[in-house]
Image (cartoon, rainbow, N blue to C red):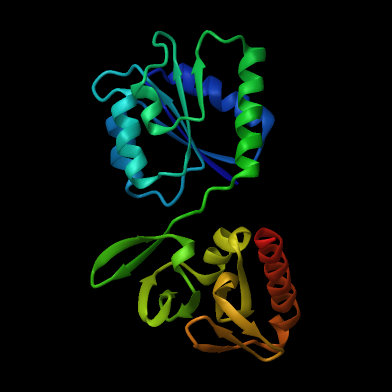
Amino acid sequence: MYHIGICDDDSVFIEYIKRLFREACADIKFYEYLSGEELIQDMRTREKFDCLILDVAMPGMDGNETARNFRKQFPDTLLVFCSGVCMPTVESFETTPYRYWLKQYTEEKMCREVAGVLSKLEKSKVLPYVMGKRDNQIVKLSPKQISYIAIAKKGSVIYCGNSEEKYTSSKKLVEFYNQLKDFGFAYAHNSYIVNLKYVAMAGAKELELMNGEKLTISRSRAKEFLEAFAMELATKYEEDK
């Protein structure tokens, strides 16, 4: 599923863009905002945006200012500016937009633009952020920081690098798996999922993380885990060649 935000003070244009995306791809969740202020306020609660369609000319906080604030939390999200009155400026490119759409485009042209965005998203999936809690503070974690996630009494425990650095979450383990399975996480046991990039070695019954910590591989998960680990090693080998 793609998570796409649309920020525009014209609700009719928002519905138009949603229709074009839906006609090209059914598996999309939209987040709609009628102002930059509304987007910035809401984004603090969001773990992920794959793409943001952002109007340049809006009352109050304009598109360029909104984009600068948005980039502080989502530096890798695909950004598409759109406008009916403004042409691109040097300021527009400071936030590295992928495209700059004009609202005057014909529907045929806009459909091609939407298809291009979806193709780009497929080729470069954005890492979803994970929210964890520690010392009564909410922390946003990149999957790259996480070594494994385990079941806990009231949700899950997120381990980062070593067993001492951990965060809690009310989210169930299966929810984390569905969120992270496309980013190198696999079940080694029904009680935890492991970031394969942190695995130093794995056998039929046990794996060892880069920090030396050892985890049991359950019999029911051994085959799928070892296959996933082998695929991860093969991918790394190709990248290193």
